[in-house]
Length: 179
Image: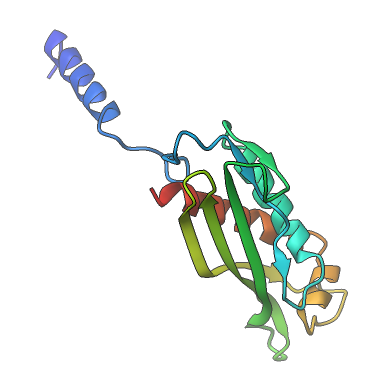
């Protein structure tokens, strides 16, 4: 089909598609309009990984701020909504092995409890009592075999940063997509 009819059909199709309500995954936002300030205090750390609570909290604040219209504070009071959580565990598991049966890559998994609450309406908007986030890492060739989470984090400098950013994207997307 060519000519003016094809152009009109294309325009009608484009307008219809634009109006159908589709949005990019992870970019939806149907939080109540009265939420303008969000408190994200540091998560509580019950894991064996020191300072992971700080890395995760900082990453979640940055991710929430990147969504544009919210003022993010590192506190739980004086805000419209608050995100709180507990790092329950950090677990390191071998994923792949060399011919000599030494681990060559690992999966680092953190398990958390997370809650996002509207303080104005006193209503929990989203919660997950067993939120898991994992990241894979190659074992450093020169450093020997990591035996625990702390060893992995010290041997792979960006391991904690990568995990924190992934966790933040997953949590914030879950909150926005819960509506």
